[in-house]
Image (cartoon, rainbow, N blue to C red; front, side, top):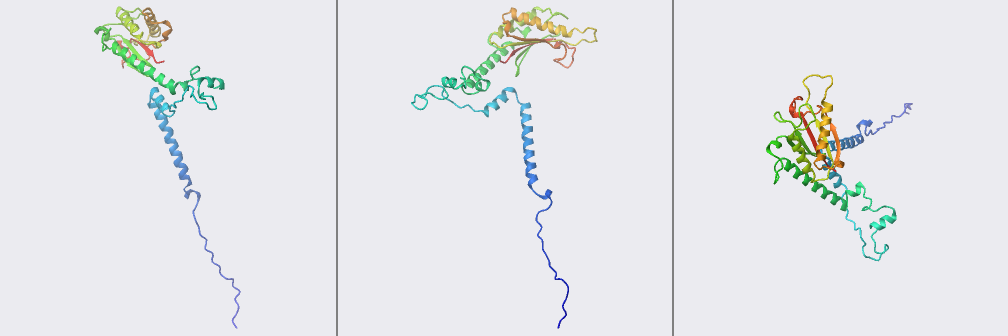
Length: 278
């Protein structure tokens, strides 16, 4: 008879281990990828806002709000609206939503018929500004600018409008030295600018700039001089036919924005007349 053993039986349990700690999973990678994509889109948006002009940004905005042609007249049917479109101007007024032809908003003006009208006006304005610029540069059919006058004119088209820059040279000045008394040359220049500006109805801004003085003065005259010269330019424009209501602002900038690297150069004595965009 065999002896009985008091030893407990040996039980082997095999545990299947799957996965690991939290950082070994893949969910965080998806979240991180979404975050990187969002940041990329954000920086692309910031870059576009900084690298584009106002007109280009408007084009982008119009691309994402396409125009939908809607008939604003009666459809001629006998349906629930008695032959009247729910988008007709008189129905919109009765519904309290307003009529776009009577109370157009900024958003409505960029869509449909208003958008086409506004785009046409902008194209016409660009053409007029280009014509004025060519006339001032002596490229027009019958130029009003003499060779001597052309030496004092620089034009450029910006987002703000057409900038007409009139400036001193070493051998000819627009104003008598250190005064706001215009020379005959400057009177002729402003007469031509006033005549050409009659082709558009845009508001006008006048900015005055002066050169720096070589020594530090107790009372630096650059601020008063640039302001009075800009004011005198306004008077010359108005006396040559420019309506007073078109003058939007008259500003003196002293010697704070030199046109060339040398702040004491004669070239910094200048007047900028801007035909502002509406």
